[in-house]
Image (cartoon, rainbow, N blue to C red; front, side, top):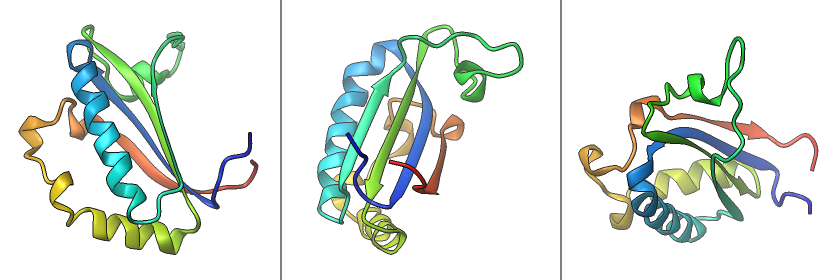
Length: 120
């Protein structure tokens, strides 16, 4: 299946194992809200087969603690312009307003960025 859209946002973060349900609920809200602003596709993935690397790994990238797992996610947009406007509007949306202390993960260790799709 080809990935929809021409622009991709990618995310990598560590989530405490005991916060998995809370994280999924938040991710579902995030996806629903972002669709209002042009999001095409949203995928959240809970780490399952994550070998430790000799130099780097998913674990070290997010400074994973023993009680955490790695989450890899991405979302797609029609283009960068829609993505930029979508994020701007979504960050004002009341449903996404949250005290950082209430997040079920450590936002300081989240890795994210935007990418131009080249294959798919």
